[in-house]
Length: 209
Image 1 (cartoon, rainbow, N blue to C red):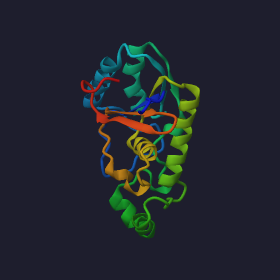
Image 2 (cartoon, rainbow, N blue to C red):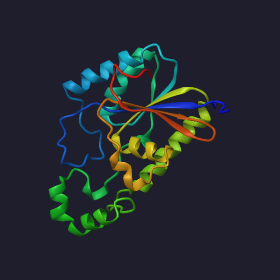
Image 3 (cartoon, rainbow, N blue to C red):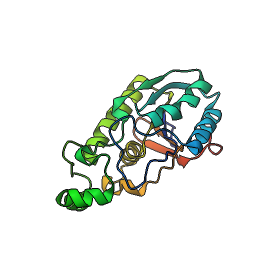
Image 4 (spheres, one colour):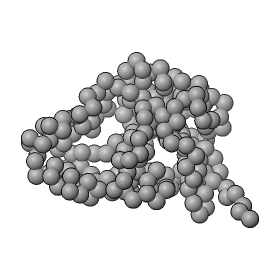
């Protein structure tokens, strides 16, 4: 007979939508702000999570994640904590470029990236392996520091994808198969021997926190 393990819950929330071009790599600065749709859904997230017993809210330092987190902490009457480790992947010299510009300016690098998308590191940037390691450091901190509690992490698609991949032991090469929509929530319960995915990419108004 299986006995349910005590677990620590992390609710990963991707920031809301922006008007940043989809074919351009985000820059390493604060980045764009939420557009109107992103603001509306962020507020719905705040309404959705209101009344839940959340121990902490950890947030990437980008404008779009802070703006997404603001209605959440307002509803919960908490303060968020900025965590640099939750930033999106660092693309180094590729940041701010469109994919056509990368192909034109760094054809060899792009070729290597397509051949080895997991290990390849753009100059001055980081690989997906690097990203997963730093995100996992935060996950382990949450598990050890908030045992048996619920924590909200407001971040980006990349960090959420690699966190889910690691928790479910999905080969990292398949991380891009996970679609994380803007302003969606993904919940993982981290037990003693296993991590359980409760929901993936849920939009406000669906699953409970």
